[in-house]
Length: 148
Image (cartoon, rainbow, N blue to C red; front, side, top):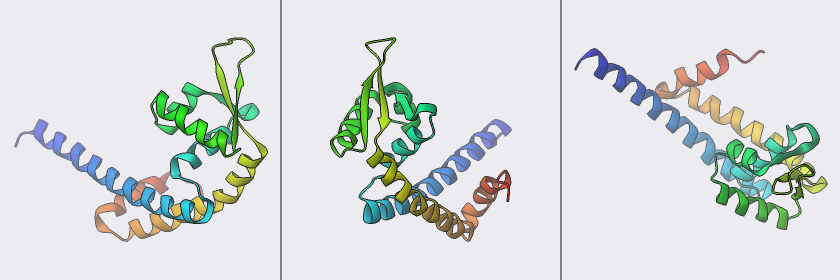
């Protein structure tokens, strides 16, 4: 195996490690958020992304990017969340083709209730992952830039 092959294998191993950690975290978050708040990880991600915006709204394509979804999947998700009264769509004043998505008070309340669950599960799952030799260095790298 040459140097170039070694580099490819190192990147592939890193990607597999990252995917394993992501899968572990996402599985635990999905269970807890569904059980305690009837909310999926991607729904939480959308509500969280909207809450972090000035004015509490985003264009649909920005939301799709934030949630790592296609445009059509984002539209379906927004429709489901809108049907639950968690967000609303607003036509853009300066571009009638543009649509903003905005949290409703009910969406803000659900997000506030779900955030401690999300953060606690994330912290617990990362602590568990840190005990696994194959994931420990990645978890340590995640914590390296966190003040505290």
